[in-house]
Image 1: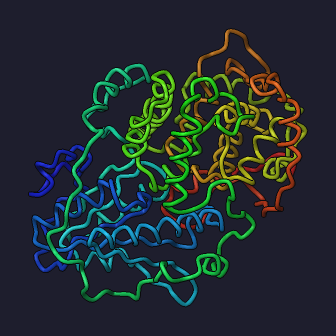
Image 2 (image 1 turned 30 degrees about the vertical axis):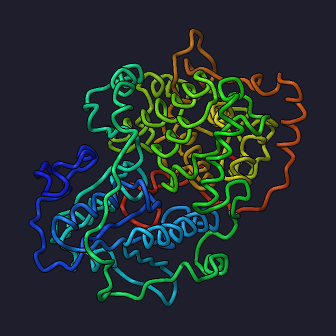
Image 3 (image 1 turned 45 degrees about the vertical axis):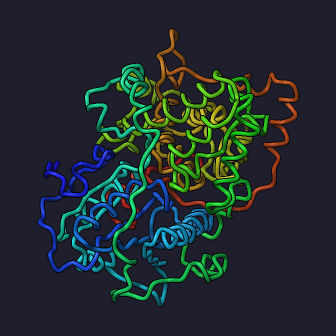
Length: 501
């Protein structure tokens, strides 16, 4: 890992623990701007990546150029993901303009290919500032850019309230994480927004940017060579305004009863529904916690929400930064891998086809209700995810196939998939605390019943209705992809065969 000293402008920044150098290049003295390359932190304000770029630009006497691009060939590119991303990118551009920053976009498609665009933009940059993301393609793309760039490249963490670097790298469990994390939270609830000292960049560019603010996003998405069988989510509208409305819903409708309602999947006010907006950085945790702090909703409800948003979400982010590949099966606890392997040859009478699982048409009504939230809504209630994940172990031919299937369904369908939090949740379903008894297929991995939903008033009816929702027919691959993000290539090279196909 490169440990170069941070440059002037960033060295004394109070948020400097978020920043690390990815190479040791000298500043490109002929550079015309500081390039701020965003992949997932798609918000214009309270964005440490943008603020770091501005501070570095001010120190160098240069403007900032914010860039966001979307390709057609990232894993699981679909109408759902593309529409959500492009709406966020459009609003990012509007917000950057209000901050006095130039923001340019590129949507890769036939007739509009721009090979190596980040490298070409970087060639004219004095320095490059990008996101420090521990999962999905952003992880290897950042390292690849840093290796090729002639200018210095700095990665900035923007997903967590507390920068993971201030916690040290030796935490092994969540209780130890909380002991360090909780006292740090108050140190990071406020920040000072950087102000650019140079006019917005108006110079030449090596490409013609797309105008997302004036184009028809629906028509644009329809024209792309992506998966058109996964539809846009109606439950989670795209864009900054929708994110702000969901945040208002949290503090007015959800938070006042959160501690009591959060485990009840049958209640519309039992979950914030913020995870898609947090995953794509449309909202940041500091903004969310400020909104929570500003309302009178009861200390126990606020504490429980903070435990979910900060205690669990940021623990999973911390874990991901200390794993070689957070999305790989070998991140599951060793005892769980061992006990599942010991029972891998057990008879599996509940095997399902991939098509039945994708469409929520298995023999398990409760599982179907869970899966149809992913397929239709692009999101699943947190209390259902444990049941959903554990049942996949019995529905697939091996523990490894179960892991790959869970990640595939999550990553392809869920707006908050491909994320440290969702990988952490899946890993928890495969491990958790060892059971006192040994069971077929699961060994000492605990199972999970559906009583927490079915035994509630109206629970049977809710599950039946949720499981009978009409679904679109999505494309079904011949095999479940395995580790599609780890090769650094757009094509999938490793597959695992699914029973029943």
